[in-house]
Amino acid sequence: MVNKIRSCVFISGNGSNLKSIIKSSRDYNFPIKIELIITNNKKAKGLNFAKKYNIPFKVFSYDNRKNFERNSLNEIKKRKIRFLCLAGFMKILSKNFIKDFGYQIINIHPSLLPKFKGLNTHKRVLKSKEKYSGCTVHYVSPVLDSGKIILQKKVLINKNETENSLRKKILLQEHKIYPKSIISIFK
Image 1 (cartoon, rainbow, N blue to C red):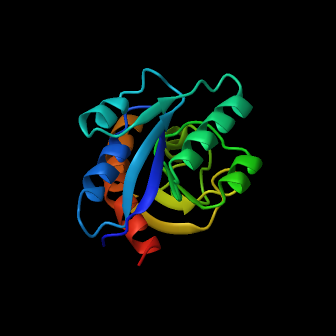
Image 2 (image 1 turned 90 degrees about the horizontal axis):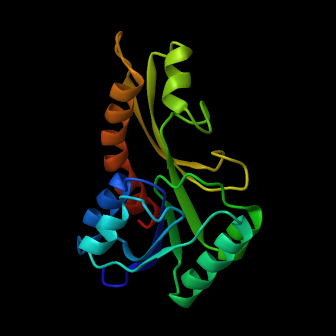
Image 3 (image 1 turned 180 degrees about the vertical axis):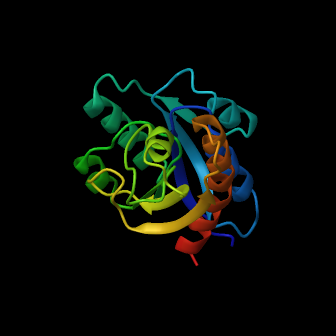
């Protein structure tokens, strides 16, 4: 696939899903090319992947959401970005940002949506004594974690599962299904 879709990834933390997408994007047939990484956290460890793979990045404070979104949109439009991945981006984008971007935005969430939207997912899953949890890649809509589901992966919760062990187990699956979801969108 020679004509890759110009894409941007938003991150807030370690960037392990970013790394997974970057590695996949280096495959000739993968449908997107990451042209920009944006973060709200100047200490985000994921920026190390931007540096390692020579991908331009911008850090915009989220103290003022309007400024963050305006600055991000300016960069995105300047670079002709047509696809946006949220990968551990721990902020909510406004309805206006979603509309103004005008193209597809996807996100990954560490639960089997529509269950356990929002934060503290693993803690809530364990507290409710679920047998399974997992992860979901979905389109971003104005309602938190409510967009159309693209792909999900289920994991079994063990008897003595902890928040940390569940987080690690699910993260491994996230790294697999995020790239698969991107491929499925552009088939």
